[in-house]
Image (cartoon, rainbow, N blue to C red):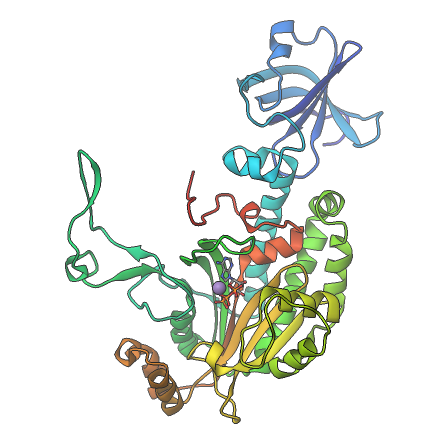
Length: 450
Ligand code: ATP
Ligand code: MN
């Protein structure tokens, strides 16, 4: 957009302001944070057309790019004509005022993309998706697609949604046709996946380094600012990898994708820093440039016990850390991300590799300031006898894991991986406080609208 070029600019009107015979229109097509300022001089458009240029209207302006005399933009468009594709009646268009609350904007999630905040969130989301693929592809990882519908209900990561065609309809509404899952679509109970990990492990035992990046579902009946019922998860899985390698990859991964956002989403992040989280740029730069702290769970418990803090949930060896503990460790104690390792086996999944002490497993959680847990991972148990014993000890149905155990029966290899909730990463990078505001359409108990 060099001065002197004749152009056509398509987009939606953000605002129009009239002053001394001139109209100033802020036009956005969502491609960048910055709007295009369009100047409409008196007499260029007839009164009736000018009236249609209201907030939300969709238009094409034709005109000349000129240097802008005002601060805020280098160039502007001097309009010579306009086509209005779609008007937006100011009396009824819901997205009128600046400063509408995020709660209100969730009710008009189909329109909120047109505001500054959500345009910026979705652009950062896009860039981070690209950075995720770049990170793994540059290291030779294969992108694999694990199933979304699964009949293995035993991954243990959370409550599952039931998938069924067992729904009829009569004049009163929906009815359940047949209570027997054996006669349902898949011939047995089927669910939406809570994690692609177990299937990703099978693919790593042949492709060596793989990753998934796809939707994941958890029917967690709690409404927090960090949980969705449908979210996107990134799960690398690596053969010939120990917990150290896993932690190194997680740290490199976070640093690289955050740095990518800093380099490529400058205007959007400046906005978040100004309007949403005043320490954002400082923290992100700090995270990229400093090593993560690494502590064992046992060390962390000692630190928490001696902290002198009055936590709502008491701390004791053997209990799971609550969000308040995780946040205190990473925000107050350390001031940057912390990786905790070697958790008690009782509070972690059956597939994590057991340590020699018989009490702890090779688990790791990456905790980040403001968010708490952002990554959960582990070295996996590759020894058939130890894994079988653990499955039995936990009272899990061993037969259901026949294919997972086969990996340990035939050509087993030490391996490790982790899961990262993509929306938690976006919260971290944008400073947005509620996970419902970093995905276009959020699903939580009681809401799957749009
Ligand atoms: P939390 O304790 O925060 O519920 P979790 O221990 O259930 O997490 P994992 O099963 O280890 O989490 O899942 C891996 C990652 O997926 C987590 O580190 C987190 O980033 C993300 N995650 C988990 N549950 C959700 C959810 N309901 N909504 C969004 N992201 C989630
Ligand atoms: Mn959970």
